Image 1: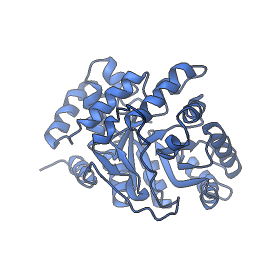
Image 2: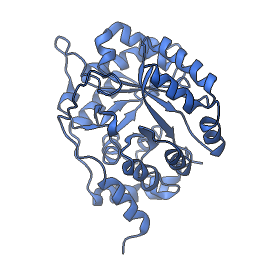
Image 3: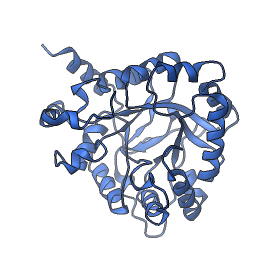
Image 4: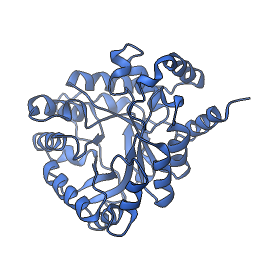
Length: 328
């Protein structure tokens, strides 16, 4: 018989929407209900991800390739705009349609703002832009949102996420009177955000409890082949999100680069593993070359079979404790 954990993992993966190279949504004219258009083609642009499998991000209606740009890597720095902005511009050039950032990521939001100014309004309008709030209170969350919009150079973000949920106190504060969830609903009513999500890599039980308390649109969850070792996110967080029709974004796919630097596996294999579970996977990049390499891996993407996933997990298992240090 299968172990219960393995069976839950397989059920969660089986619920992933089928990948499609041409996911479309009806444009109702309501910004809060329609997905952003694809970025415009520049002269001589090489839009690798136009040929990559795309999926709908839950019920947001956004069509996203399996590779998306994370807000870390060189973007989570200070004073390195000359290196960071070209990474974002390359992502736009190859057809990335989901961009991640956060107030907690140093000057990441400022780099995005600079890139959008250089690329033009059509580039900003062509991506599903996600940022976050680490403030759990109403006033603090709205102050962070105001600052995010200013730094990003936009009048709205597509997804605003309750960032890095770790314990019950986080939930009690953000759901309580004067909490960040109420701030998110106000911002949504005002058109400053379109969707509301949650993120976390510390304790899967906290994310599941957050989902039970509120109908969030997306979850950003840790997913890499060390996951089954302890406190697994796939059979808990991903499975619950699938039951609720939420979009699932994968992170920690490379374990902050440790899986690659220790030569446990290769980036393309890790992207393939995580994208076989999530709708899209955010990866922080250090250079435009890394953006292109991830885009090429996404274009070649085919879901891993059960046997392939198990084989990779077994390869990682002897040193898995090195690759899940972000958990509690």
